[in-house]
Image 1 (spheres, rainbow, N blue to C red):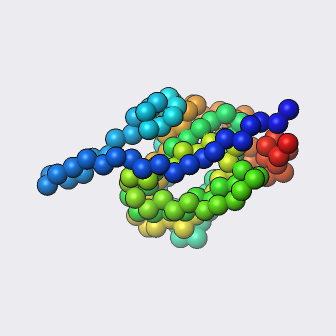
Image 2 (spheres, helix red, strand yellow):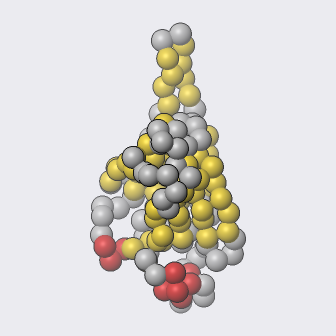
Length: 137
């Protein structure tokens, strides 16, 4: 039985502000379509390094560069695309069926990730051939 193809997508976060500065709000089950159970961030990535190289069985994620920029490569078997995250108001909803790799990190990049599940090593698909077996049908 193959898993259904879910669509990762880029959404805009509403920004609020005045002369004092800006505010962007991310809320579980509002602009993030799941309850957040785990939050982590990636920073200090050396130039030329790619990260990720996996998909998930169940975990959904929301990615936002709160500082700097990076690119996220997505592959869900049916399409391959690169998404530039270069604003704290761009939120990438990443579905489990997307093999993902992050690259081209700026020196000041802080990539915030909100996840639907706690860390579970069994949820990770780290072998691309296994990913194709699980999501390729």
